[in-house]
Image (cartoon, rainbow, N blue to C red; front, side, top):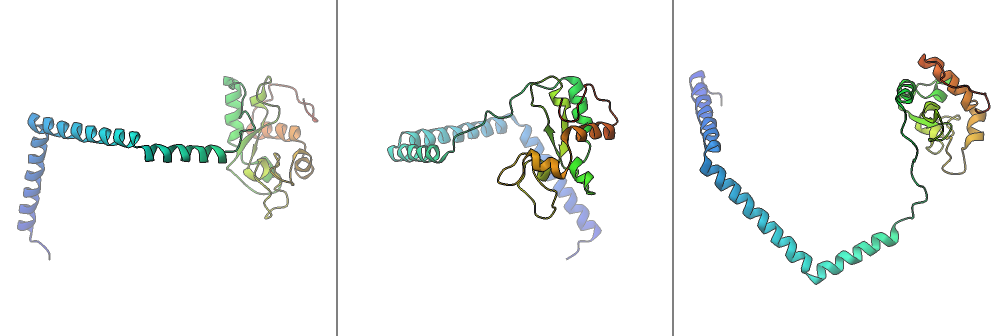
Length: 198
């Protein structure tokens, strides 16, 4: 059912009047006070309900059992995480420039993988550690072998296949790749590199 122009204008005017009344009511101090009191009472009821639940022996017993199940099934943490010093301003600029490149290994094999993570070649605490990075896709960095491509060997092996030696056999020496990344990014090396490590 379509409305005529006159009926449409009347309906629109009625909606506007209704909205204006709602705005006026929202500014009324009594309405605001009632709303706040309603919210305060709801919060108090919620707190009382939670307190009652906390002192209930069956709830507490179930909570303790759940915590013990979680603790028993949790695996021990073996690593200390990715500890290291924060990168300097110059290292950040280098990391940003290299981070704009696609995966260097995929590029060598004729593919383009723009989603990368930075692989540190020489730890995270040594001088220039954060400037010695390679842009690697997940399959060349740490994800288990992808059977789609023969060269997708992870540097950080999570299984039987992968590791530095196998990775370098298929791709190239990581230090040569670092030099290539600097050339592609158009930046100069701030340190000396021997091809078989620094």
